[in-house]
Length: 323
Image (cartoon, rainbow, N blue to C red; front, side, top):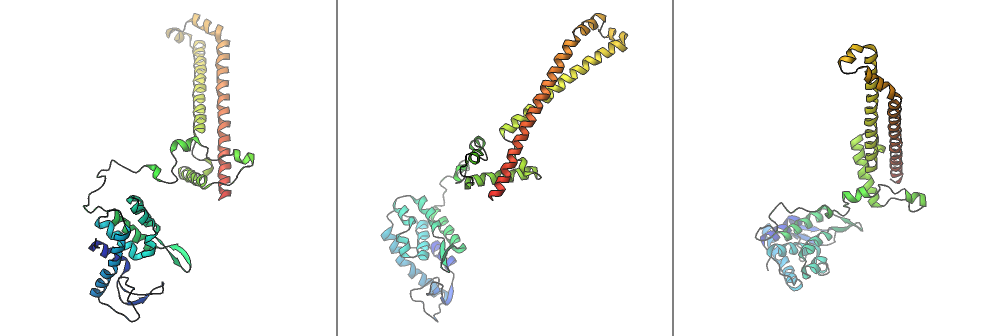
C-alpha cells in the first residue's frame, strides 16, 4: 500500500518545509520535509525537490509496515502509521504498543497507544511537547477515520457513561460514605488524606463555598442534617398548633365572660361553659405538657444540628491543614 495525499499532507504539516539545510537539536542536518539521509551543510532544495525527497523517504516506511503489520489496514490507518513512523523512527516502531496491539487485532487500543509518543528529551529531561501532542492527536484522528466516511454509531442515543472518568464515584457511593473518616484519627491510623479523599473534599468545599459564599464550614447538608432540620420544622408546627388551640380556648372563655349574649347567639350557652370549666384543668395540663414536649424536641434537634456543623467545621480545618 502506498501513502496517500492525506498522509503526505499530514507529514508536511507537522514537519514543515525547510528550503535550506538546518541543524537540529538531534545533531543531524535536515532539509525539505524532515529529510535527513542526504541532507548536509549548505544544501538547499525547491518545493518540488522536497516533495520528491518526501516520497522517497516514505517508501522504506511503507515496506516496514508491510513487513511488520499482520492486520489488514485501510488507507487512513496506513497513512497515520506512516506519519507516526516518520516521526519516531523504525526501531521505536518495532517495539511500540501501537504495533503490538495492531497485530493482536485490537485497533482501538492501537489508536490509544498513539498518545504514548508525546514526549522528548529537552536538556536531558523527558517532557511532553505541545507539537508532539498535537501530531499524535491528528494521527490518531486519521487512524480512526473510516475511508468511506461512515460513522460506526450514527446516532446520538449512545452516550459515554460517567464511569469513563478514572475518579468517577456514583452519587450512591458518595452519600453512603462519610466525607471524612474521623475514626482513623481516634484510632491513630493514617491521618493523611488520600488523593481520592482530597478530590472528594475539594469538590465538596467548592460546592459549599459557591452555595453559601460566606462560611464554607457550613457545607452542604447531609441526610442526617436534613432529617434533623425536618424534625425541628415538624416540632415547631405541632407546638404552634397546640399554642393556637390554647389561645382559641382562652378566647372562647373571654367571650363567654365579657359578652354572654353574643356567646349564647353562637351556641355557647351556660351548660357548655360549665362543661368547659369542669374539664379546663385537664385540658390546660395536656396542652401545656404537649407544648413542653415539642419545645424540648426542637431543642434536642437543634443541639444535634449544631454538633453536625461543628464536625463539618473540624473537617474543613483538617482539609486546610492537609493542603
